[in-house]
Amino acid sequence: MTDAATRDIVSRLERRRDLPDEELLDLIANPAPELAEELAERAGAVRERIYGNAVYLRGLIEFTNYCENNCFYCGIRRGNQNIERYRLTEERILSCTDRGYALGFRTFVLQGGEDPGFPDERLCELVRTIRERHSDCAVTLSVGERERESYEAFYRAGAERYLLRHETACPAHYRKLHPESMSAEHRYNCLKILKNIGFQVGAGMMIGSPYQTPEDILKDLRFLQDLEPHMVGIGPFIPHKDTPFHDRPAGGLELTLRLLSILRLMMPKLLLPATTALGTIHPTGREMGLRAGANVIMPNLSPTDAREKYMLYDNKICTGEAAEKCFRCLEVRVKSAGCYISVNRGDAPDWTAR
Ligand code: SAM
Image 1: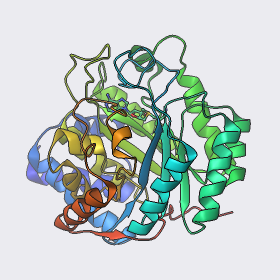
Image 2: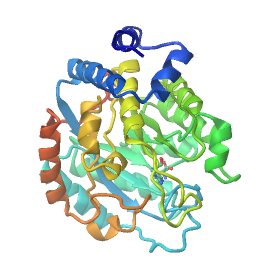
Image 3: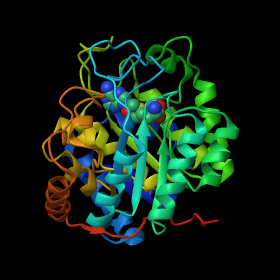
């Protein structure tokens, strides 16, 4: 692609928020640095127009690593016998939110494996307690696939956001990443239900997961356009030593950054995290993610002894430091990307609170 052609295709993507399949595929598969630069520049400007240079923080509390699922890529899969399983008590979870609150966090994300040790009522009680203690904070849940009644109960309890990556929009690809007992359709349907209930919803996928093709990524983009989630979490796949995909290569930095920019241009108001996985494959991956159009960071508020056990992939960063130290480090990183940390909840612009 010549410089002029690169500028033309990126500016058309920005104006129309879309491109024909062949051109999108070209952007996905084209590794030219000039293209990445043009995409990042335009995406950064779009993000700035909508959000200024604010970066929203979501304090992540990884409260259980028990999981009933056996996803081929994931370090906390049921079949992994080499990890020590844990569940945080309510007291420990609340002490994480209190500490996070004191640092300025106004969103808490409770994430865990699909753990029958946390049935709906236990989670609802936890959500209610957090909302009572910190009424100016949002609570996000990320606890996998449940039925509509469960999601409705979570919403009534005060959870207003839900993260559930669709993982891949191609059912054939989904089959290669998950055992027979799991179903792509069930997962996609959960996302529709969550949106229908009124949650701010986060979907997303790993980049460079085994067997993923550019055409699969194109399907992901079309799926996201159709679902219209409020947030999209994308980060590189990273192998974990005790999974069937232990010897697969990690997803690429450049492709992940290009996709962040493409998503920003296609869906300008998205909340887009610069993920921990991005920071794991490159020392300044998250800063590059912010420069490519991301506007959310999810620092870890879990107690340090739990972090070491919530290893979704090898060499995950920020597993040793206490929340305060992580926070200070992030402040510097965010600033170096030309942004600042916002202390408000960072709701999706089009979402109205109940
Ligand atoms: N159980 C919940 C669920 O299914 O959504 C939340 C926890 S799950 C571990 C969170 C996300 O971690 C998954 O959606 C997946 O995309 C990501 N993940 C798992 N293993 C990974 C790996 N090896 N590399 C990168 N991301 C991974």
